[in-house]
Length: 135
Image (cartoon, rainbow, N blue to C red; front, side):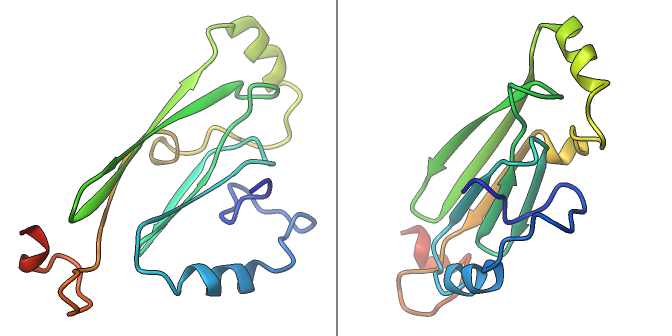
């Protein structure tokens, strides 16, 4: 998505009009869900149950960074690894920092993270971490 579902900063004029409806649809599913967004060119990672929401930086404005995402799918869980990397062009980054109106790097936990989402058991019990799920 262009607009992230999790906002890295307060914004009164960038609300997703149908965010509530979108969230209600996504919440219906038990499988691990990764929602990626940008627009703010800033970092934010949030997990709510099986949903992982990520707002990522930009290579065109401060912090001039990108994010590598590794997804490891297992029978009982999905592991999302987020690896934040800034440009090596520190002089360009310093200039870009003077043109931004809010902090965009986020906290350390919004840059690099490993998030594990347990899957719902296939036995029909509807639980996560069920012992029969690991067979």
